[in-house]
Length: 287
Image 1 (cartoon, rainbow, N blue to C red):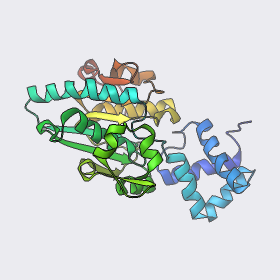
Image 2 (image 1 turned 90 degrees about the horizontal axis):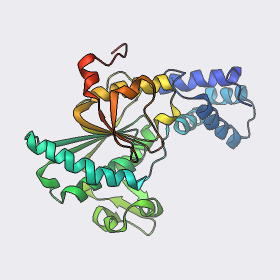
Image 3 (image 1 turned 120 degrees about the vertical axis):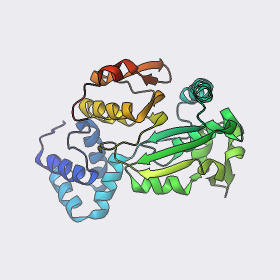
């Protein structure tokens, strides 16, 4: 039975969020308890208070817990329908807009990028849609995550063969990867050079701005409604007026944040900015 008032659990939450630098009520308790209990089972610990004492004295275990909570499961080309819509609908429309406005730069943000498969998938899709020279455009992909360890993996750009081969379209593997051994592939330099990795906390106050597309997938489902609304309000400001917000297939924009965006593609969960909101203000406090 879930007891959110268990003294040990409360102490673990405080410690956890002191290190993650987010509000202790940002994440759903069901998600947190599942992650914490997974670590407790691994150590054979049954009591929250006992586990709290462990993370207070064992930095390695605290780091493991932080990683368990912050990590976001990712794959190359996760949910193919999303990538098809991005390649066949979003990119052509974006290119048309850029040409009409004589703007040669495409800026994309992969928020909560984890170990890098998503931003690299974005870069590969740009090459597929625009060709070797990217149609004469410059492309910049900002890839951020709170987890330094995941970012270090992403920056190395080396992945086990089964991870690469699971969802990456077969014809794309020799074009965008180099096989370094029977078990591993390395991302091609031309893909890597489009992506800049940076540590970033989604619950921080200052967001980067000026993006044509923002991917934020399979992360906000673990976050409470009010924290979600705060993130969406900041993403609204980070997105250019013509921009696209791409969510995970399991996610929807709820509450007050729902009026900030208009649905563009239901199946792929792609949204556009609602510019009517901009005229009258977002109505979110503290911004």
